[in-house]
Amino acid sequence: MDDNQRVTIDTYEKNAHLYIERTAATVANDLKEYFHTLLTNLPKDATILEIGSGAGRDANYIESLGYSALRTDVVEVFVNHQKKCGKHAELFNAIDGNLNKKFDVIIATASFLHFNRAQFEQAVENARNHLKTGGVLALELKNGTGEEYSEHKMGTRYFKYWTEEALVQFFTERNFTIKQTLQSGGGAWVHIVVTPK
Figure 1 (cartoon, rainbow, N blue to C red):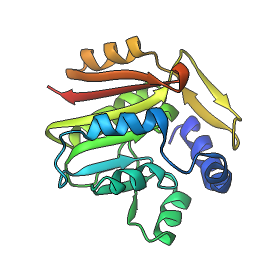
Figure 2: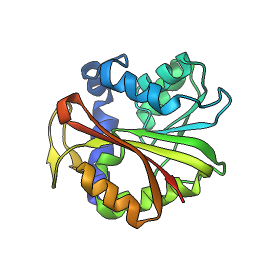
Figure 3: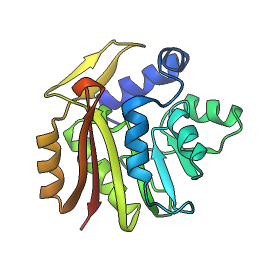
Figure 4: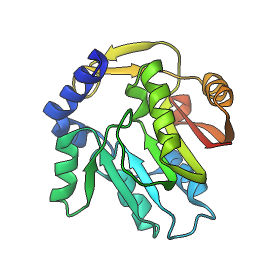
């Protein structure tokens, strides 16, 4: 495991309670619109994988709309937290984990932003391998350029920033079709929805 991953995961393991306390507990506004757009016309029995479920906020909302989502996280504290809340959750490393199943939709909200470019590429390819034919990958990332370690909210975590243009180029070069891009949070976040060709 690379240093940026080790540091970030360690911070989450030690300070997950701070993350839970300081993160909005319900889906609202732009994020709510994003999920509605993403799931429109998706049959209720569609298979959905969430990568980086954290405390379970987004999966709770997705399930409130009548869907089922497999909750996963690389942080054991979050997996255990969800189990204590009566939810099924699994440990999963997006970079090289294998769930031995394929999904119609893979959602990763504010989780792939902790990957450097090489890790991001590995995680995207791993997601491709977990998608059914015609399946979609939906990512939310921090909008911007560069990378840094930030102490914001809970302790040292690694972040890589992406612009909408950079994401479109990245996925186009790797033989994905761009289904949707949008920004939220006043431009703080960028979302991209893609499907492998």
